[in-house]
Length: 221
Figure: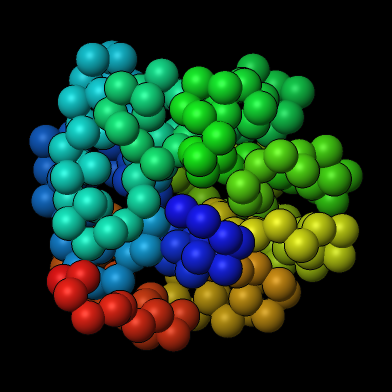
């Protein structure tokens, strides 16, 4: 994916495909439905699976994503992303136990999309080599046990003040909260349970897409 404009478009509605919310065997079908509804990027988060199982699942998700030209990112595991041919990887806060963005690029190549979680404006200034930043948690969430306390859109405003990098907000984002997160300066939103646990993931994704002004190009369905 070339250019920050194309990446900002891809980040608009970013689905966190978490095996803690949907069983691995059901996840490809749920992701397929969500991408048809308007999801623009997908991240596989599969903390409890073996490396082999993660690779197999990532390949299945990639098939669903490729059909609608949606990038697939793998959480934490650059090796899994490489084996599955994913578009990139997302790593945690700089200075913790995950790889650095430059190290991920060394594994996946310079074309890879590498995202980094940030929890402050100061952290954001230290990850200029990331393709995009993820700020949160915006609101209380049970999706990620180690997410920390909710910080609200003020964090997005603080980060936007110090960087022009593509920026997404994550954590407890529901349809009625999209507007205030975008108004704070986010380019897009990361959503997990609001789509994955919806009775109809495609319709849930379509509702978010409508709120975000997403229009698919002809031929992507």
